[in-house]
Amino acid sequence: MNVKMMSVCLACAGALLAGCGNSREKNAAAAAETEKTEIVGDDKDEHGCIASAGYTWSEVQKDCIRLWEKGVRLASVDDAENTLFIVFSPDSTQVELFFSEEDAPNEILDRRSLPAGGYVWNMEDDDTKNVRLENGKWTVGQRGKLIYKQVADK
Image (cartoon, rainbow, N blue to C red; front, side, top):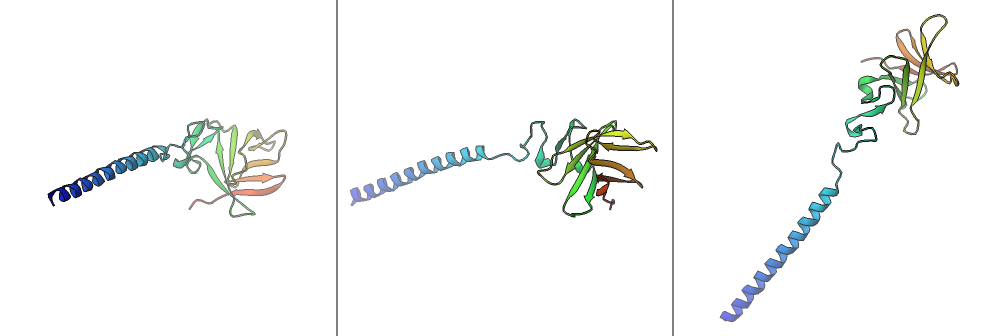
C-alpha cells in the first residue's frame, strides 16, 4: 500500500510539474505576442506626425498640425458629408486645401492681388479653384461656381 501511495504521489507531482512547464511556454508566447502589438501613439508618418493624436503634415506650415486648431473649416454646398480645411502659410502667400475625401490630394494655391484690391488664392496655370474672403467668410469656388463655404462658429 505504501508503494502504491508513493507511485500515486509521484505521478501527481509529475503531472503538476508538466503543467507548470506548459504554462511557462504559454506565458512566453503571450509575451512575444504583446511585443508584436502596435503601441498606441506609435503611428508616425514620414514627417514624424502622429495620426492617432490628430496630427497631419502641412506643406505650407512645414509642420505637423491639427487641422481643427490651425485650419478654417469649410462645408461643401452640394454634399453635407464633405468638408474642407484651409491652412495658410505663416506669411499668407499660400493656402493648402485639405479635403475630407481620402482619395483627394491636398492642393496648394498661391496668393494673387486682385485689380480692385484684396487677394485671391489660386493656381496661375489652371485657375480651377479660387479661395476668397467674401463678407468676412472664406469661400472656395471652381470655375465661377461656389463649392465650399466657411462653417459658422458655434
